[in-house]
Image 1 (cartoon, rainbow, N blue to C red):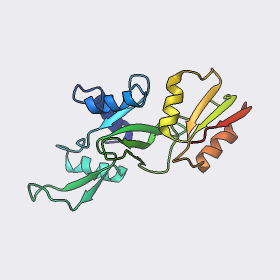
Image 2 (spheres, rainbow, N blue to C red; image 1 turned 90 degrees about the horizontal axis):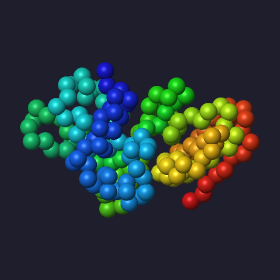
Image 3 (cartoon, rainbow, N blue to C red; image 1 turned 90 degrees about the vertical axis):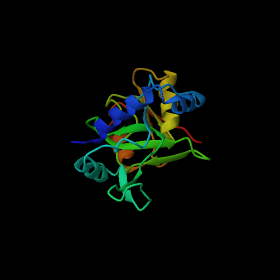
Image 4 (cartoon, helix red, strand yellow; image 1 turned 120 degrees about the vertical axis):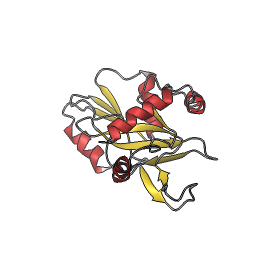
Length: 187
């Protein structure tokens, strides 16, 4: 059965493809390295040549929606794909399962950031003994801080959801027993 986890593995394979020249170049331009972080690339074709059952599951997950765009063959169905031709970052739940995606569609006139839904934390729930928690305004800011390797052992960073502090973030903060300070980055 298709899941956000298995689909993300295909996106991770996609970023490593020799054909993924533009996504790799864009990552380099913003100072991120896919080999250091969990980043995937969605070419928008993951549903091609899939069974109807797989496509129905992708619809349930919200990663494709039926479209009324024209198709070359009346027996085919057109779909709009979440995060099409974009970099994909996974958001996790408390059990470290992927429950959401953040997409950065970089190949548009102006890059577009979007979330699949309102669930999950990027990059993951911090360890309960975290002493210092950084709150980054975006997934990209959070990824940059993680890649910088400046975080000490009992420090963690999580991304806000489009700059918003959601109930899930507050729940995390309350659960950190050893928390001594929170650093909030502003844009």
